[in-house]
Image (tube, rainbow, N blue to C red):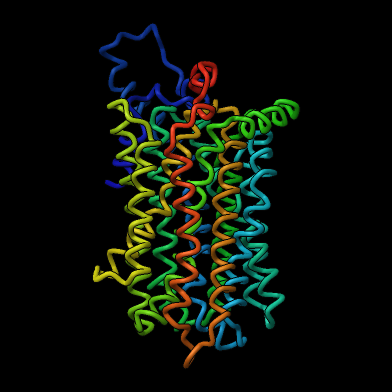
Length: 459
């Protein structure tokens, strides 16, 4: 049933898929045979055509994205055992968790170029091998530096998980379905964040964190092999065209209007869910480990559901002439209000507030849908990589600087005071408000010219 639901969401008919239109997976028809005889065969043919891109493109990249989310959020559960065994402080935990985002961010522009040059199949499979090596190194580490290097390699290895998947969607699926497809991919990939809560906590108690990362290494290597063997090859792009396209992305004022808000909100959501939500719940809310893990599980579910809800909402609003920019602005307002409620300790359900925070992490569905309207599909890898660079850089900055701010207070019985978290969160919130104002104000020099209004499909 789940497969049929995904299939129905992806296609309006068999000929809407670009890969099928090019005859990559089509079954040759026999025009000389009467229609009454070929109708049943045509139905079977359409089913094969529809399922081929789902099985050969969509699901393999979803698996890779699932692994990336698993690695991104696992440290929220791992923080306590790592701190106890290796004697790590708040600044060490912040650096160890955020170095994932540092290498992830540093790789975004080169990865965007490589995706447009060589296609998502080659790039994703090679990088996932690097992630498997990093997970193995993390599993056998006996001091902080080795952990740091292993985590950095993991960040580099999964750096293309989102952008490679988005590039594949743009290449092999109809453009009008991209927002919904993005939502489906993020929703299914975000199940990795669900796995990184209660299931990972159970495995942590059963086999330990070293064996857990050894298991992750095996899953990552299997994903690399799956993508390399199953995903079809993309047509290479000339190197000169790649370089020119990157300049076009960064020269577009619409990109610079979108990037600050998208990065500050989504990066903050990732940073909080990946580490500091658990620490807040433990130090400020006074929850025990079970309570923290249940909150993290609820956040992961909210992230997954938020992705599909935002994708569906963007798809429905587009049909009514409302672009995803409006929805992104509204999501940012809700996110800012939720953080105000957290900082001021308003009497609202804790599960609700942190679920909103987590769901905003899925707003990449909207941001990348906006980019799909701004740039043609030939620039998809570079445009998505350029924006994702800001997302990841913001997550690194928030995750690391929050730990630095907390270090200015002395922990009592292993817990940092409430005012320390409020100060760190408030400083970041101020930047988000500035970014929202920049995004919302209709400055004349930011309005695209008639030439810039050209849709990707018209290029």
